[in-house]
Length: 528
Image (cartoon, rainbow, N blue to C red; front, side, top):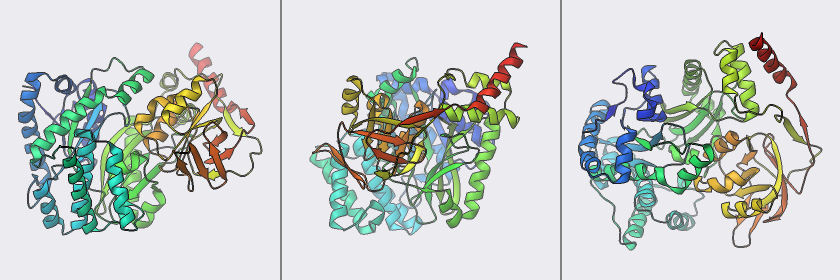
């Protein structure tokens, strides 16, 4: 029998990365620091790999393992899974031994059955919140477990938004969200499928789906591009839900302890109020910044800053943190070493040495693989007025031909020209086209979405939240406030200022001489 791992029970859990995955190991580390982490348990990588392969022994053992884990969560949270009066809901998340941001599936609000939805209404007195959880669960269930076309699910929501003259799902009231949930159930029924209403059945199906997502095309492509093909699988973390969608004093966000694009020693924080975590990292909505938290919830803003500082000093590196605020209370859901641009990596390494967090030898090891001969700060020469302005999410500049989807990006790149991928939002399924692109531009999203994270990791300029940018897929063109661009046209992207220009712009580069001189000094000392 494979035993579950209850986060926080063993002080050595944080060192068991190859067994538990980096996400679960870091949860254990944060728990040991007494940070506000919701209770969680983990199914180890070896067990999940067996589940994904259909091993009959593992499949047979899964229900008992989940029952033991849920019993632990119920005791820790003081709620009962799927209860009619005080229900516990859980999230089901992947976690390989190396970070694969956004490449595998997540299912939130598991356990939100019909009775549990009524239980949420009873326990919170907030029917809008309850039906929002139900419709979110149905969306995830339909897409991740039943494999329905996400476009069909989105079409139902878009239709209802038009009928209600609403701009986003946040504008929908309780009655409309209840109708939307019913529409989703009808859509599922029309496909001759059904939603399990038993919470334990929901959980087992969600776990199996997350285990299997390790073999999804986008995950396999990412591992190939990142040299991670030897990873054996993913663990699965089941964690008590905390809710950022409970109203104006609740929200969800992503925070970096330093700017991962420039290396500046200031936190970079994005937040969406009255939302759940996937709303931020998916890039489908444009978040607010730290200023909004400071204005609405100043105590939480201070707590978040303190968490970022503690984690950075404890881990001795820049951290990428996911958090939720539930009715004014801060919860930390994840931390990991932040992906960063090569330019930021250089500045961060030097600053961490000067702050006494790491040695010069450790800094040099962290910079292994960066070609300092080519490291430069690029900018446009007198670019003029931009055609659209957004949020600079990953620094640098690039010029390329416009591609409006991943397949076009691959095709245009194979012809020999640089490519700029322009999308309404960038989903993780775009990873192959992303890899072929010199820069990325999106209409929505923020600095902390998966698209921006991947861009920084690869040192590619990225501009998100371009207000006024829309994509006409049928005519293969993009409409910007400053003009119309056809697929294949040239544009210029400035990831530092967040500006996008029509046509080609001249690029000049400057080397970070001061930082490179510091590296030369370290090398000289090492040789002495």
